[in-house]
Every structure is written in C-alpha cells, then in structure tokens.
Image (cartoon, rainbow, N blue to C red):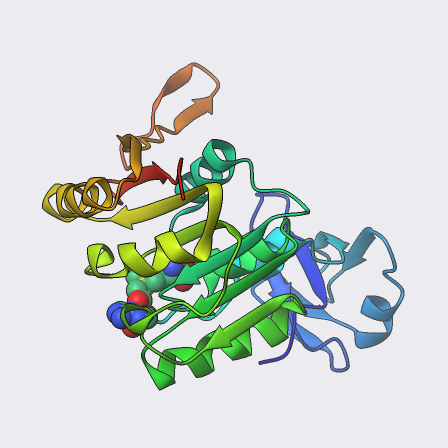
Amino acid sequence: MESIKLVLVSSAGRHIYIRNTEEDYHCQYGMIKKEDMAEIKSGGSLNTNTGATLMAFPPSFLDSYKRIKRAPQIIPRKDVAAIIAETGIGKSSVIVDAGTGSGALAIFLANIAKSVVTYEIREDFTKIAEDNIATMGVKNITIKNKSVYDGIDEKNADVVTLDLPEPWKAIDSAKKALKTGGFIVSYSPTIPQAADLVKAAEKEGLLHLKTIEIIEREWELNERVIRPKSQQIGHSGFLTFVRKVSQ
Ligand SMILES: C[S@@+](CC[C@H](N)C(=O)[O-])C[C@H]1O[C@@H](n2cnc3c(N)ncnc32)[C@H](O)[C@@H]1O
C-alpha cells in the first residue's frame, strides 16, 4: 500500500487522505489538479473545480497511523496512551510485543521507543503488519512469525506487551525477556483473562501493580448543546500492569 502524501480538510472538518498526488484527485468537493497538490510543501489551501476550498498539509504520524490496514481488532489509542504513561516508554526503551495483529500497537510504540520486536503466529497477519510498517516508514520494528508461547528470544527488555487470547501462557517467557524493573502489560477484553494472567504472574514472583479500564467520554460542544455525545466508544479491554522486581 502506498503511504499517504497529503491530507485535505474541508470547512466542516472532514479529513481526506490522498496517497497518489501524481494524478488529479476527485472527491465529493470536486476535482483537485495534481499541479496544485504539488505546490503544497508545508501547508496551504487548494481550490476544487467546483469552487470549494480545502486546507492541505503533509500527513503527521497520526494521520498515517489512522489509515493503516486493520486485520484483527487494534488497541484503541486511549489504551495505548495508558501503556506509555504507566511504563514510561521513551527513546531508550526496548520493547517486546505479541501478538502483532495489524501492527498498530507495535508501530505506535516504535515511533517513540528505541526498538520493538513483535511476535505474530499467523502468516497472513504478519504480512499485513509488514505492509503497514513499510507504509509508515518505521525502521525499528522486527516481526517474528512465530508463537510467543514457544519462548521469547530477546533479553533485557524494558517492557513486554501482550495482546493475545491466553497471555498467561507467555508469562514465563516474558519474565525471562525482561530486565529487573521492567513491565509486562497485558490487554484483554474480559476479566477472567486478566485474572488468569495475574494468577500466573504472581506464581512467577512478579508484582501485580494494577488492572484498569480506560473510559473515554467525548462531549458535544455545539452552541448551547453541550453534553456527552450520545454515541460513545463502549468497552474495549482491561490493562493489567505487572512488574519484575527481582531476578
Ligand atoms: C487482538 S490482535 C493484536 C492486535 C495488535 N495489538 C494491534 O494493535 O494491532 C491478537 C493477535 O495475537 C495473535 N496471536 C494469537 N496467539 C498468538 C501466539 N501464541 N503468538 C503470537 N501471536 C499470537 C493473533 O493471531 C492476533 O493477530
């Protein structure tokens, strides 16, 4: 898949993402000439043949991230934010992730961390994730097409993230892969999964820090109509944070 080259924003706030700027672009607001798109270097406006004006600028990381191919369910950004905030992932962090799925979490973390190694059991999802990584131009991710339940090759990781059906099966390997003081973060849609993970972690001598659910409530702000939006994101998953506090 080609990467996004240009973002257009209508007066109503609608975002349009253009991958091919080598040809004239047709959308609901009319036609935009390729020569006009080529003029946009850092930001500006474009007029369509029907007289509409659209704001235009090159994509940010987030613009491109929002358009990656999705195969299995990806972790919502509210939950990614909590993973980063609760573990302190930064530019020197070494991360192991499983399962890769579409690569969404791995890509987000790689954008701020030193490196990410991610495990995916399914070959078809591995290919989708590889494509997403290439499209995003992220260079510090390695994908391994194998089961994380069979072991983790890496050592001295700062954080291991687990987003897969039976995370407790990876606890032993995750512990061995982590440096002392490192974190395991497990993301599960149901509480029985989180409870089994905690049980397995405690059996391994890991410290259960907390299990949380992040609830985002968006508001409508439209003149005097100021209230929570009637349609909200429902439940996504529970985040369990575990720490390796001894060898
Ligand atoms: C919900 S998806 C992960 C989504 C991913 N975190 C993202 O943000 O795009 C769960 C993934 O775990 C993979 N998986 C399941 N068991 C696995 C295993 N034993 N080892 C590695 N990956 C596994 C599945 O194939 C699936 O792609």
